[in-house]
Image (cartoon, rainbow, N blue to C red; front, side, top):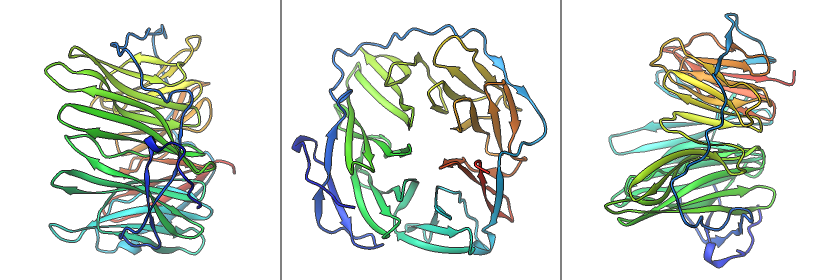
Length: 392
């Protein structure tokens, strides 16, 4: 990848270029930085959000069918032989060509953690370590022929983190962003669309927290600054604090708390204004051009962005169970997970829901990449990766 000169010095982000698969840092180089022309300026005159609650009517229960559904060509890969005698928690993080990329975090002592990035070749059953680092890899995703991950470690001043990327064609590693999460702010979470990977950073002091929403555009080779938010701490908080987001090809959706004189208003809203609703207590959420899906304890809701259509509800087998990991396959088709034991497939055009998998000890969050759905299933003895080609 070719890194270019920054367009705006005030928004400069440093790059640390690593020549190989090691954890050492070398010379820093600037990356090209762009401001999102639509939403780059800080939001003025912050007020408690009073977004209109669209009248969706009563949510219609999805019609449940008992037999599992087959969506395409299904391949199963047994990774148990590679981890004999070990207790591991692994799952597919990205698919590229005929390989599955995933991470494994291993605590080697009370104070030492090693994280590994693996490439499992579907054709040859080869399991290769691409990268090792003595920090925790919190999550990994991919766009095109690039892997992106967040690695971090605890320091006296907070969680020191870095966002790395690997070019899968050359296996060279660069640092995209880095920082320290202080005062209980979270390390960045990565979310990917077909062209971009996005994340939020929190710059916290005792008196204020500045949050910046960023994306890296693979085709433009540039970091895009979408929005900046400021929360002023004190006896009564004032400002905005976004604490979660999702970025898909449908755009950005953000879960934000707005404070005025200490009064908090939590809101889930899209950047394009198609959906805005007061909402708290979310476990997970996602959206496409037609629907917003939210998961709560004991329920999932599929809310249309336009009020002409009915909204749907899914109730798990127990009200204490959670629903999460929504993956839209098309405008009306979505995969999601009940607890950590089963995946479901909903057809919102028909108002039906069907189990995609049988009950299992642990079923991972699925990923959906280039027409393929992948997930992991594990129990006391077996570790399996499943890949469904929806094109076949």
